Image (cartoon, rainbow, N blue to C red):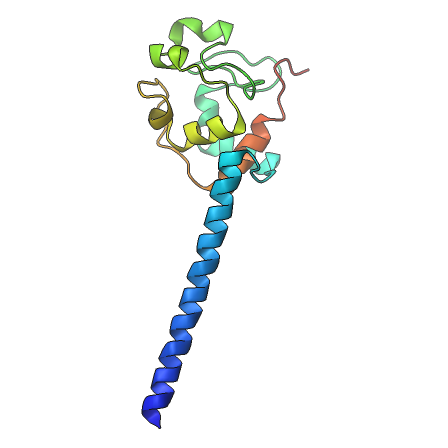
Length: 151
């Protein structure tokens, strides 16, 4: 009898773990699909602003009214912009970025922020990458709050 109870308990534990893994894989797959197709979560701009500052983005990039190039290009209106095209940063873009032909979208920015050198080998961007989907969505939501010419 004890053997059957132990076996039933082990089976129950195995089924629970299997179910948890299935749920985790489903969530990951849905998130990856959403990122790949541009249907990513809306994100939280306030959390994105905090992340922009805490990751050190603000030490190289300016955003908002009066933003200009610094150590990196300004990011106003980045979504929809051709990579390597801001006028006040032209002489500092890497040849790889200028030749990339990328038009920044949520999908391309997600890939770039995840691993800059994988998307644009030879980029000057020095960032270790960010792969957390929620944080990426928040960061993109923040960037989207600034049009090309914010007032």
